[in-house]
Amino acid sequence: MNILLVNDDGFDSAYLHTLCRSAAARGHHITVCAPAMQQSAKSHAFTVSQPLVAHKRSMEGAAEAWAIEGTPVDCCRIGFMSICEKKPDLVISGINNGYNTGFAVFVSGTVGAAREAAIQGIPAMALSAEYQTPPETLAFFADWAIQVGERLVDYPAPAFSVCNLNVPPVPMYELKEPKMCGISHTIYKDTYERRKSPRGDDYFWLTPLDQDYESTPGSDQEWLQKGHITCTFLTPDEGVDQGKYADFLTEL
Image (cartoon, rainbow, N blue to C red; front, side, top):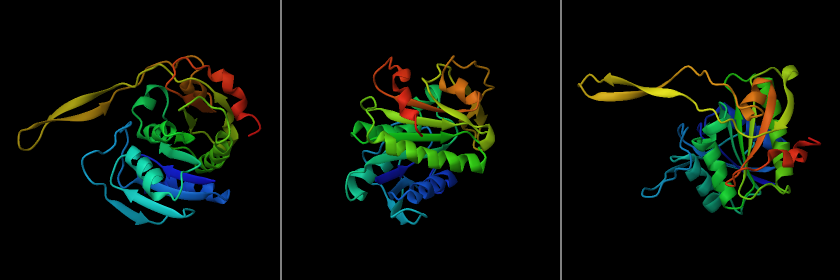
């Protein structure tokens, strides 16, 4: 297959390089278009009124690789509209360093880039691993996710949906079977700390708060806490029964 890889953590993310090697090892033709700088929480933003500088780079396993001074969605659009010789069979965004679960999927640049591909009719995946995921677990997840992507291309998933995968930070021998599930309805909590600059100007620094929420029963966050990989079809249609697609993860 022809696969376009994008992310929001930037071209130099080790997780992106791991994914690229895994995809190439299965014989796929890989094009990489990733932000030149870290671009988390950009959601579906893309650039309208200024040029986007692109730097041709190299990456192990990629036939062609570019670092683009833009958002994750910019990278996805430029990739399949201008750089790929033909429309990709699959777009994979990630692997993100940190979960994309619950309402975080609405602000995630990782998910945003995959969503852009889905809107354009290209099968799309968003992959995320929690911080400090062991290297052997991450390598397994990358290999397994590529196999999921091979299945996704011909699977009757919901229209315009993103296949969103998350893996918990547990050793390989503790990793449990994947679960189809919906997203948690809990909200990530943060605030802004107000400070004074040396010149006397006010500025605000985003500051996370202690997270004391309980996961929604049967949701991505609950299954991850129990050590399972999670899979959710993120779709513009509300009320999709994820259980309807339980067969998607069989025989993998």
